[in-house]
Image 1 (tube, rainbow, N blue to C red):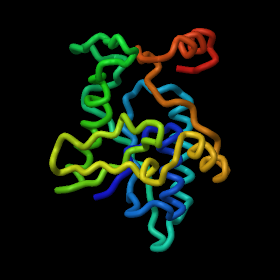
Image 2: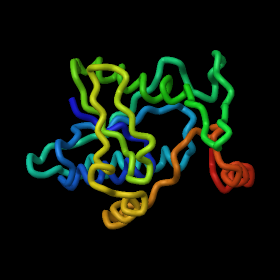
Image 3: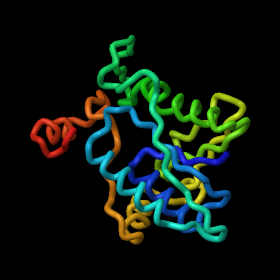
Image 4: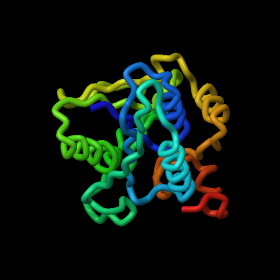
Length: 198
């Protein structure tokens, strides 16, 4: 099985568009969106728009449909989680310690969905562009292989924005949970002022 781990942001939207246009080697058959239950409303609106876009778009050369699948964890919405969570930790160089929510609310539900589809092996395509090469990591399980088509094609974030706009689509907002502690200060101000809808 070959899927896109679809986050609803710029890079994964560009990857989905390129896949639909037949421009990705070994294209995915599904785009899987792991819903934390706590995304910004603008992200949900964009995922809905892309759901409609993909359902109307036939992929050459086989004319098969690629669809967006929405999966959720059994833990419930991230913002309502009352289990143990680690506080965000930052390193002296400004980087931050790995967040555990990504695994629990994104990676794990996608892997569970793959197993439910009967996948013994899977390729998971991740929307990492050229300037994010530090984020490239192999899967920590043997049955999953990661691919980074945007990086392989030498595309940066601006290239991704151009691809989305050339497809006649709006540029999606940055996808993240509304209460994410790793949000920039300017984003907190926008959220407080109501310029971002939670």
